[in-house]
Length: 102
Image 1: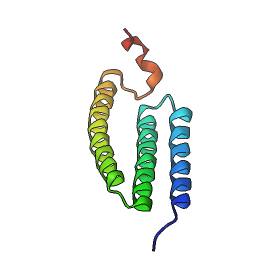
Image 2 (image 1 turned 60 degrees about the vertical axis):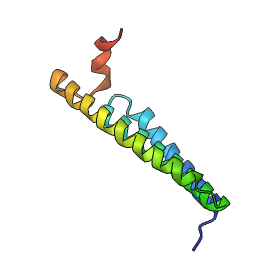
Image 3 (image 1 turned 180 degrees about the horizontal axis):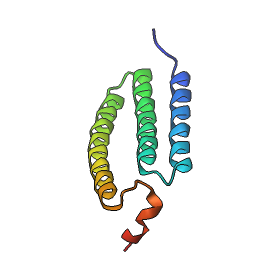
């Protein structure tokens, strides 16, 4: 069964808005911000794959693989940074890390 492109794009838009809401609402919690960014990247990946399926091109799948690779690298670095900051400050509250500027 082929899902219409409009439904895929609506789902991708809803996921993107949910991820953006997660980033904007929980700006003080670094882990929730990372989860929101992951949801937004998955929404973009879904839109690429849906478009590629609609037009019969493999470009969307290639972009999806690139997004997966980029996301895995981003998650590993970000979680390492969160663990380091939690050990240093005993919190994951982003407001506590203002002394790291400049």
